[in-house]
Amino acid sequence: MDTIASSPALLEEHVPVKSRIWISIADSAVAILQSLVAASALTYYFVKLRGLDPALTGIVWLIFGIWNAVNDPLFGYISDRTKTHIGRRLPYIRYGAPLFALAFILFWVVTPGSENNQTLLFLQLLTVLFLYDILYTAIATSIYIMPYEMAVSNKARSTIYIWKIIFMVFTIIVPFALETIKPDVGDAAGIVRFRWIMVGFGIGMSALVFLSTFFYQEKHFAREQEQPPFVKAFTECFKNKAFLVFETISFTIIFAQTALMQGVWIYFDEIDVSRTPLYLALGGGIVLGVLLWISQRDRLGIKRSTILMTLLFALGCLSIFLGGRSLLPAALGFLLFGFGFAGGMYLIPLMNGDVVDYDEFKTGLRREGMYAGINSFITKPAISLAQWALLTIMTAFGYDQTLAKGLQDARAETGVIVGWVAPTGILLFLCFLALQWYPLAGEKWETIKKQLAFQHREKERKILEEKGFKVR
Image (cartoon, rainbow, N blue to C red; front, side, top):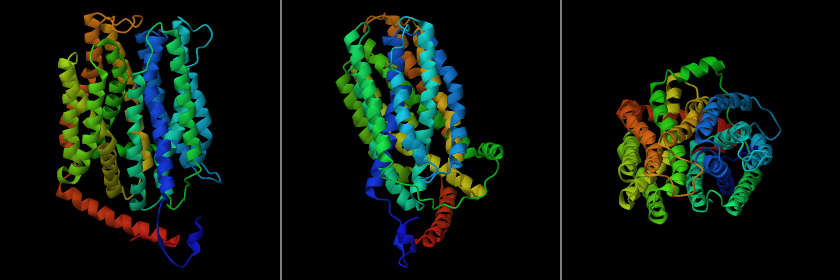
């Protein structure tokens, strides 16, 4: 309990800048390691550098997808009932971080007898994925929920999210930067160096997560509301039409981020285009996209902004699909990818918040945790499906992972482009159509939001004043 709670003078709730920065650093550090595992380096390493058959790699991701879908709701259920002297979420972040580093390092270790052994490579990838994801889920879910534990007022929480958006840019930059230094098939010294770089990232990012836990804490302000049983709460979420429509774009954004960040590692290996202008186009698209979505959020609204974002994202895929071997259409595609990535970082969380607000309007309960768990239940398979689709399509076009860079035939090159952007582009266009039925827009919704805002202010005022704070 805060010492100022006993003071007769009421103070406005405030989250220290160092707490906002460090929780955002932890969030970004975990996301960087996850992007290397789920969306870029890991599949490239096992397929291209270790020689695991692409078809077997795709099977690993499909098997893993089953577990990946169910463990988030399970962990949310467990963590909500955890009781320690430092809180419910903090122990998982602090004490899970060293184990998280170890699990990440195990991906890059060459186990005895695994060279050219498809069975051992298959088992290593599958086993370590399961171990890694248990720890990732425990830490990432706890970090995701932490802002709700650090503050009660929406005003105080919003100061955290601004920092999180800033640091999340690194989760895109780092994998693309590492792509430029990846080794080629047969480059023994380069592969060893690449392994050590990955080990360094695992240790460094996990150390940041561990250190971060000494700069923020759980305040336990919120009173727990009476919640329905797990099964009932789970099924009731699917009665929320807005949630169902939202899940189409949420699933697709995860699919797109995974597929595009993974595929770019192979794209630059086999397609003769210059990296520098394409990366500049991508960076420009991200910056312009953030500015666009922030400036147009209120004028267009979340619904129309997201519809526009999905269309631009889909057109980026189309540009690569039709002209990915030439610089100008490829640059246009990367520019539009930037707008899409920016929208995924900024617009999707806002839409998710509206969905939870709507549920609160209907039920009177605030259930961020349940919706977060079910969202992961639905969207996490997108990671596995994106990997499987890319690898399956490439294999169908005759891709040979044993060849050095640039030695695939024209048909295999086409397979790389098709596998990279076609599934994502199709899903984005379908989302563009589905979002027309998203109900949370217009004057009626704005009226509901105002009612909810008033109710939130009243709840916050009562809780905070009991603790010695006030909300202005």
